[in-house]
Image (cartoon, rainbow, N blue to C red; front, side):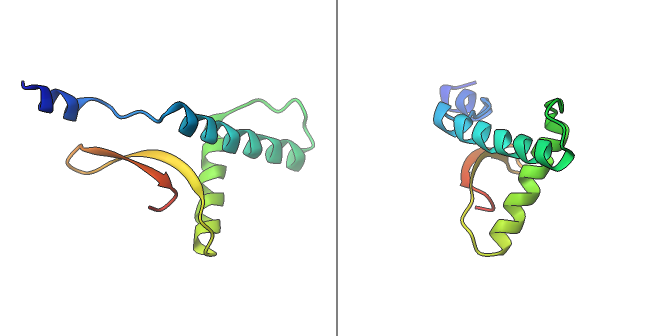
Length: 88
């Protein structure tokens, strides 16, 4: 395997700044859930926090807003790229 193939097979990762942005989004989603449930002791659970963040980003994008929600996208052929804004 040559060096280029090795690099192509490596998993992409978000930068620290991109990961921090996503942390900010999930923290906001968590606070939103605590307000809705009136439960300050609600447990952190990415099973619903990620889904809520995705749904909010989708709705806002459909309404014409630009949503910065970095993610690693994997194509069908296995190649990856980083998308800085929701929906490309």
